[in-house]
Length: 295
Image (cartoon, rainbow, N blue to C red):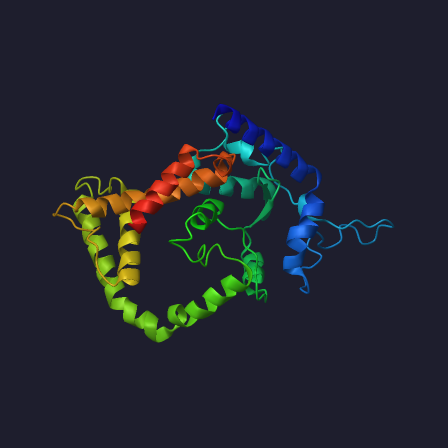
């Protein structure tokens, strides 16, 4: 077992070196076909830096400002314990700080040398969202993809959020009429209003009468979101917002499993990705939570 782990780590290092040295070649093979026959086909190039200069150089994705890239780590080193500048529990502060340091367009790089571009300007976001594309490419949540592909007995696809290409377009087309119809949305309002009313009553019951502070507000907000989703998806109330009655064990386990999913997804994204090569604690916790929700 130890030798297998060492071999997998060595393979990961070799693969990381190869990706770092041949990123343009890999982009030509994997990314360019996705953008073929679109305005973004020449995806590494943007506007000219100095059009008036005799020798003009075009800015590419690697010219976007961001934290320093380190081989095998990308920009993820800022989250590592021995370099840590930020808290994993306050990621909103991380990206607010990157915005202050580097501006409205910031480059983040994965350990595999895959670039992720963050946009902060509203106009830029609008341009991306309105860009006409039949098959838009969005980086998937890799740990979900890996797990669901390992369980074809349960999942026919990796989900609309993680699918790409024709499968994504087919899922989106079949769901669009259901989730955007004004009539359908109008029918959901009474149930959602009831959920919101119960959430308000729960906050009133939990807040301190002297300071008016609501302890563990984040936990209560998570329960409200879970109750709303279950109401819409399952057509029934689950009782996550009950004030006086104790929640059944299965309800508590479901809430804990959903929370664990988000924690594992966070750790898989901001970690070194060792879960891709052998079942780390992050992957085991994720799989256990998925199994509990499914069952």
